[in-house]
Image 1 (cartoon, rainbow, N blue to C red):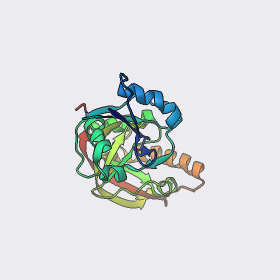
Image 2: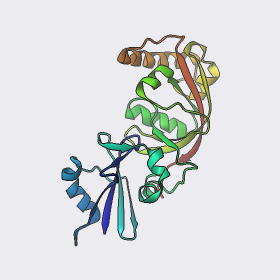
Image 3: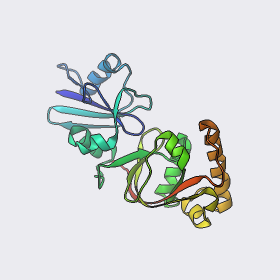
Image 4: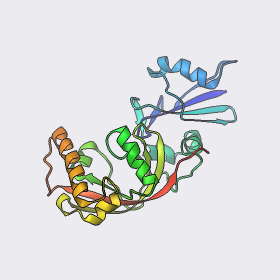
Length: 237
């Protein structure tokens, strides 16, 4: 039997070793997962975390892992998903609980900038409270984030890389921060839902980020207001 380690970072970029996921022939009498765990420190320079999913396909045993500190040759999910094969089958069957996305042109991210807050916001999406999100254009460009656009399918995680739900962007408006409306504040579903509360929370966050990246933030700063619909809440297969 041959064992394969699909090692992903928190945005589900896959680590390649010599152009493919790390794999080895399992010694006689050894369990596939144990063989990978024993070989990883030497071959990858790190121990493998708890496996997020597993799949047996004939003589191949596939295991998925998410590691927030993985480094090396990392391939974005849209690239490796489009190739199909064992990693994609494992991802769909195990990581996404059997849900087949309508496209492989996926993006993976979390709301907020801290796992506890990210999980809370994703919970609001799942419960139907949150149906929009705002991003500061200058910050997104500084961080290299993609621009959301209508039709974009995104996997939303808990901030640690574990998928919680999938959403589809339906509309994006680029406006000045000072021109955000009460209707959008209510759609974003954070705090008390008021525009005053929305402005206070987002201004505080964007000003902290402005200090970090060295870019000024004001009412004239451009923000992208993205509306989305919930596609799937991930459960066990």
